[in-house]
Length: 382
Image 1 (cartoon, rainbow, N blue to C red):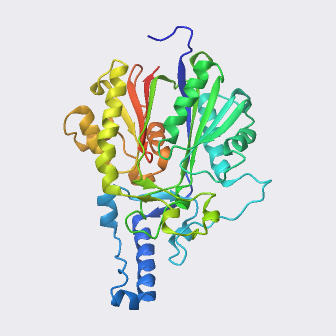
Image 2: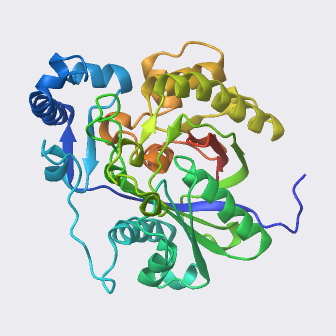
C-alpha cells in the first residue's frame, strides 16, 4: 500500500533530438561492400593461402531479415560511409565550447521542458544516462545542467541499453524522498562512435539520437500530458555476451586503441535466446507485484534492438500470436526508422506512440541490454 505521505510521481514531458543526416540500408551496404573489397584485395595472398578468411558482402535483405532496420539517423554520414574510414568524423571542440553530447542533450531537454511547461530554474536534478559518455569528468550532467540553467545537482550513469529506465527510477525515487522536486533525465546516444561499422554481423545495428523526460511530483505538474509512475523495477545479471572494452585503462595496457574489442561486440544469438525470456518474466513479475496482468496493459514501449526479439517478448506476455497490426499497436516498433538507439529506444517509442491512449490506460516502458540489465516502468495515464 502506498504511503500517503509519499508524493505521487509523474512523467510530464518528453523530448526528442534526431540528427538531420540519414543512412539507408542501401547506402550502408554499398559502403561496407566497398570496404570488404578493399580489405580482400589488400590481403589477397593471405586469403589464398588460407591464413585469413575473405570478408563476405552484406546486403539489404540480410539486414532487414536480421533486424527489421531500414535506416538510421547519424551525426556524421560521410565518415561512416567512407570505406577507408568507417567511423564518424567529429571536430574537436575547445573546453569552453558546449560538448557534442551536451549539445544534443540540451536540444532534447528543451523540448521536454517545453512539453512539461518548465523553465531551467524549475529543475533541481539532472541525470545524464547513456550507453557511453563522451568523457570521464566533469560529468556530462553538470554541463547540461549549466546549459539549461537548472539548479540542484546532476550526475552521469551508465547501464548500457537500460540506462534510461534505470535513471527514471532514480529520478522517481529522488522526488519521492524529497531530494528533488523536478528531475530531467536525458539519454544522449551517439552510438555511431562505438559501433564497429567494419563488422558485417553488426554494422547496421545502431543510430544516433537523444531523448529526454521530465519526472516530477504530481502536485507540481501543470502539463496536459501526465503519466503517473505506478512502479519501477530493475534487475541485472552479469553477462559477457554484449561488451565494449574501451576505457581509460587501455593506454596503460599498451593495446591497440582501434582493436576490435574497443567497439561494440555481441554474441547475438546468445543474447536473443537468453534475454527474451528474462525480459518477459521481468515485466510479468513486475505487473503482478502491482496487482496487474500483462493483458491489462494497453501498450508496451519496449527496447528497440531487434524486431524478432520484441515480437517474441510480446507473444510471451499476452500468451498468443499477435498479428502485425495488433502487435504494432500493443508494442510499437520504431526500429525501421531509427535503428537501435541503445537506452533511448524505448523512450522514443513512448514519445511517439502515447498520444492516442486514454485516461486510466496502463503502459509499460521496458529496456533490456548489456549487463544483462532490465528496467521496467509501469505508467498510468492521468
